[in-house]
Image (cartoon, rainbow, N blue to C red; front, side, top):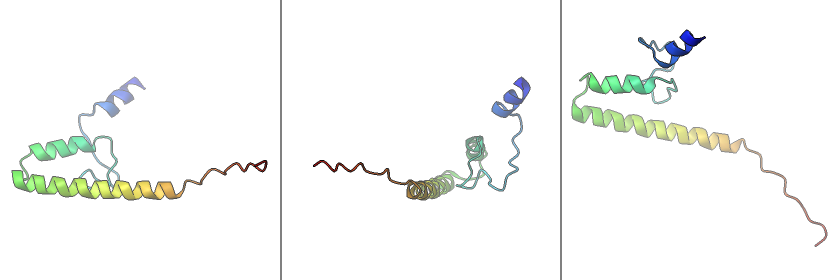
Amino acid sequence: MEKYEELVHHPNIIHYLSPSKPWSYKCMHPHANRFLFYLKESGWFGSLQWQTWWRRYQLRRLLWLLADLKENFKQIKPMPQKVNINT
């Protein structure tokens, strides 16, 4: 179990097997930020290209998270109110 914990929290290779990939704004993989860090460092994008991509990514992620939050709030049932009949 100790070795498993070490591998999960400090991997040498990260392979994203799920349908959700770290370059997708919907990805919730615990090491997605590590991928994004190395993507920026790789030089794949020029500085302006990176800023444009990063802002679009962040905006889409924020809108997606807010929509998810809105859906979760819809599922919350209000607590019944106590009615005081002695007034």
